[in-house]
Image (cartoon, rainbow, N blue to C red; front, side):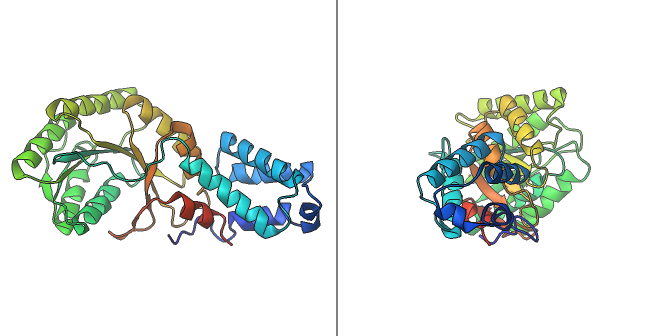
Length: 305
């Protein structure tokens, strides 16, 4: 997992600047109050969120007082461990859930500009590489070009495709996609939805309708409801996740644009806020640039060098 999460100066470099200017302080069994305050501020600026940051700072204070942080390596290892623990807490199963009998239905949600349709294409490519047959349903009938964009991804990945005219009822497209997927015997149906502002009640109500229609058409569906979040928007991603989770029971998160952001900590904050596992990270523009999420590797990369 090769991430450039924090631009030119990594989170660890910034922490080291403030917390390890005098490693002797650690060796004597403590860090002073000012250092902890500055550590807290740095973690908040990295978008780890208040609850996680408070826990991390308190645990660092406790370990230092017990003489367990005697070097910069100890300090970094402690932070990696604690961030990894936060990502593994609660509902943290990063694997895709598949239906006991095909088809598996995946509903994909997100605001405009988050990379939702591109993430669908990348997910389809990954599933096709794994030998699964896939159908893409173009439920985003609102955004100009969304149907054509998804059709291109279907052609690129060898997936089946169901579309409609712009302005068609998204719930009807979802229903038709499941019908077609069953008739064609595909393994996985991925349904796109219209990008919407999380503050738009009318559009969120429409999303609820899509979810209800999918559930009515196929028992147990959707088997996954994946929310795509732009990793560059910081704490706005947390608010988006909360709003979407109130409308539709989310089962997983895809966090995009982490190849060049200084805000990688938002991954931790979002998981903490909605207790939904991060399942994939979007790291680039290529079809292969969708990485399964690994909490341990992500925490280590966040605190890399």
